[in-house]
Each structure stands twice: as structure tokens, then as C-alpha cells.
Image (cartoon, rainbow, N blue to C red; front, side, top):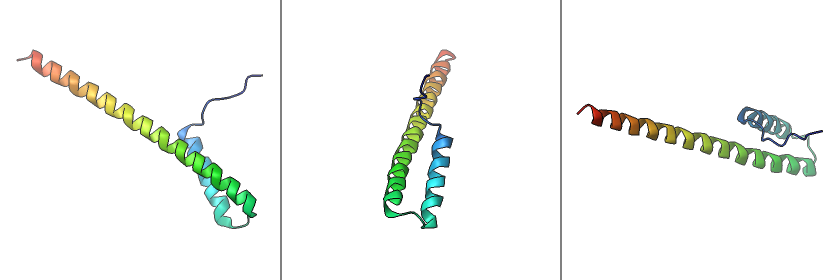
Length: 78
């Protein structure tokens, strides 16, 4: 059986992080469980931040490509 090794989507990451926050805000977790949840939350936060940074970089590349094409097309009509 193949194991799913792909990263969760941004939305899945955010949903899990939200669930952890709600659980921890309840205040009913023993200390060791709260620390485990906190550690998982930090990992999810970092994963989400990385996903956002990657998306931002892609947008910058696409916008730069569009500007270069626009500059190239403007130069041809002169």
C-alpha cells in the first residue's frame, strides 16, 4: 500500500492549526498534550508561511514575465 507523502494543502494546514488553537484555548489539556499541540502548531505555522512565500514568489515571477512581454511588445511598435 502506498503511503501519502505529499504535504497538506494550505487550507488543510490552516484548518488543522485552527483546530489546535481552539483545543488549546479550552484550557483542558494536560501540560504534555498542550506542549505537543503547541509544537505541531508551530510546525503548521511554518509550513503555511512557506506556502505563502512560495505563492508570493510565483506571483512576482509571473508579473515580471508580463512586464517583460509588455516592454518587448511596446518596443516592436516603435
